[in-house]
Image 1: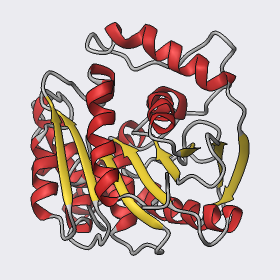
Image 2: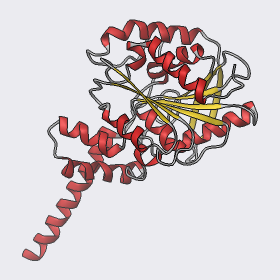
Image 3: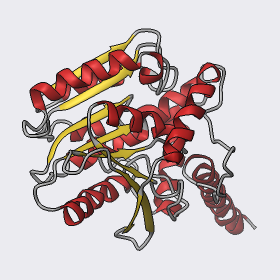
Image 4: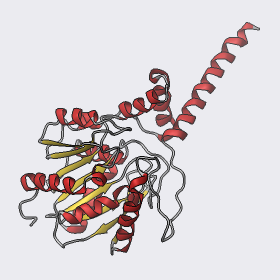
Length: 318
C-alpha cells in the first residue's frame, strides 16, 4: 500500500503547486475583456486618495475625446493587434509615446499627459498596452513583454513620420517601468529622452511590497507568482527590471514621484536615479500619492519638464 502513498502525495503537491500558480496568474496577470465606454462613462482610479481628482480627470478625458486623432495599429511580435491614437499639436514637433499603467486605461492614466504634452508643444501617441484599452491580449507582464511593444511603437513612429522625427518615451507606474526597460534595450537616435512617472525598481520589489502589506510571506508566494507568469503568461518575471535597465540607458531620464506614494514608495525612484548611467533628474512632489504628481501640482510638473527639455531636449523643437 505504501508504494502508492508517495506517488499520491507527490501528485497532490504538484496539483497544489499548479493550482496555486494558476490562481496567482489569474489574480496578478490576467486582464479581463474590456467593453467600450459610452460618451459619459469613465474608468477612474478607485480609492479615497483619487476621489478628489475625479472631476478634473473627467474634464481631461472629455477634452481628450473632443480632440481629433489618427488611429494607428501595430502588430506585436507575438501576433497581438495593439492600437494607439495620435494627437497632433504641431506638425514636425517631437512625438511623445505615452504608456499607461498596470490594469490601467489610456484615458484614465494618460489624459493628463495629453494636456501636459500640449503645454510643452509635443505631439502625443497614446498607446493601449496589451491587455488594455483597445488592444488585444489578456496578459499583463509588468513591462517584460510590453517593453518590446514600446520599441515597436518607436519603429512605427519613425516609419510614419520620417527618419528625422524626434521621440520621447513617457510612462506612468507600470508604463514608466516599461519605457525604462525598453530604453535599456537600446534606442534609435530619434529618441532623445525618457520620462518615467512613479516607476518601480523591479516586479519583484513592487509585488513583494504588496505581499508584505497583505501579511503574506514573500518567499512562499512570490515563487508561485513567478511560476504562474511562466506557465500561463509565457514570460519570465525576473528577465529584466527598470533598475537593471537604467544602468544601460544612454539618453537623459526625468523621474517624477510623489513623496507619499502608497503603492510604489518614492525610494524606488531614488534608487533608479542613483543607478542611472546617463543624466537622471529626480523630481519628487511633497504630498502626492501614486500617479498624482501632475494632478497635485500641474504647474510645477510642467515647469520642471520645461527646464529638463531646455537642457536635454531637441534644440530645433521650438
